[in-house]
Length: 127
Image (tube, rainbow, N blue to C red; front, side, top):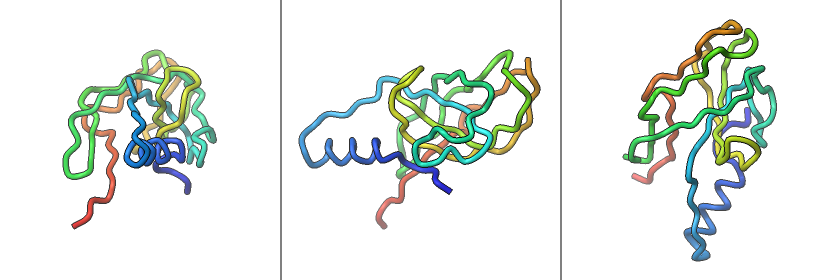
């Protein structure tokens, strides 16, 4: 299974830390997938292709969580979303990271929501 941080994001963070380059993502966008999105974040895309803006609370103990609902209205197709990808642009842009979501079948025309606090990412913190 290939979900986690993208090579692009890892390289950008390392360059910011070690090579005095800046790195900022103005907005994170979430896309749904029906299976593992793979190392490039492009495999198994859901029929619903619209990326939705996500916001996150401040990081704590190496983790962040969404601080608002992420909703798709009048969703395309009938599927089970099992994975997500995060991107730095509404269209095109750079794949940032991916992960799993609790499968929740939806029907075309439904509203699909990932509730506030239910999309999170974490890094291992030295202890």
